[in-house]
Length: 473
Image (cartoon, rainbow, N blue to C red; front, side, top):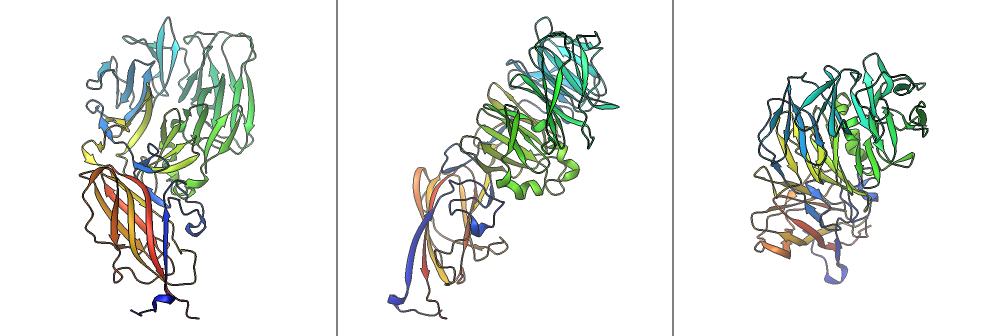
């Protein structure tokens, strides 16, 4: 290694955090220093610091087949379709059968009043039912559709075979009547490009109707016996999976063909640009299997990437911060998400339902995490530099593992593991001081670092010490 005169060396100290969230649309060289370039395993609980996400715990025993529905009966029970069975659970331990055997297909569900609170259930093979918490009853007049929603006036059904662009609505406040003239009825959602309806959702007093490339809103005229009015809203914003429709505070969010959208009033805007790389990785043959769950301020989008058929990746958006973080990179073949009383749940192909963002492990296993920085040039792109010290400000409790890797490249193909003896773990914020051996990471014009591990952790800031070498020519 060349030895430079001290007065020609230039030592630099800089620091960064990850308060600008995830950005995969811009070149890593052209994003803010406080940006997450790649990673998994984080949520917004400690933001602008990033904290390892909550875990998941088993919610009762597994069912006898794939979770084809996960929904709630009011605020009392969680209800699931597992294979050919319908079941409910209000204790977290025991799933109780709802009588009957049903097709092993996906369901739609919505709450309504049928002589008291009732959960309406629908699939395109068996048709419609309502369950009042004890008894399930068939609704013979309900069309055998794929999608269903309700407002305080009527029930709406779409996706009936042979009439995939029609929306049927029930008689006024009567979920059992879909045939009475001038009370119940049907509206067609015709578009020049054609296509089937892909989702229905009741939101802000109107019924939002989606195709994969467009959406419309059904407005009520104010009189219960007058035909509803369908108004097209966009010919380039659609929804590719009804299971991604979720309310987040005052907004409706969903996954479109190439973006994630936020809707309010009668308009929508895209918010998915920062996760563009992940959206481009979605398996197009399995995009309908994408699903989401939500809280009052966060939207958790689960997507199948690469060759995966079921969602394997989850990304979280916080509408107050207007930023994304990589939430989970190891989903256990989940198929459906739901929220009951502010608690998130998800179920999968094994029939198991999980309480999400619960605890500090994934069913007893430490939560894996990783965060990657942008490439740093320390203000002198043309000069070679030596990274010789890192200080990690954060919380790394006992039992948490931590790895640090440094790369002289921006494409993530060459990483050097930094061996060090960290200070003792602690439940409070601390500094972990790392000496970067000069014979480990080669001289480079820029460098990136990657922190990874398993178990609870909070990363507040990373301080970097480097030596800028003279530019020779």
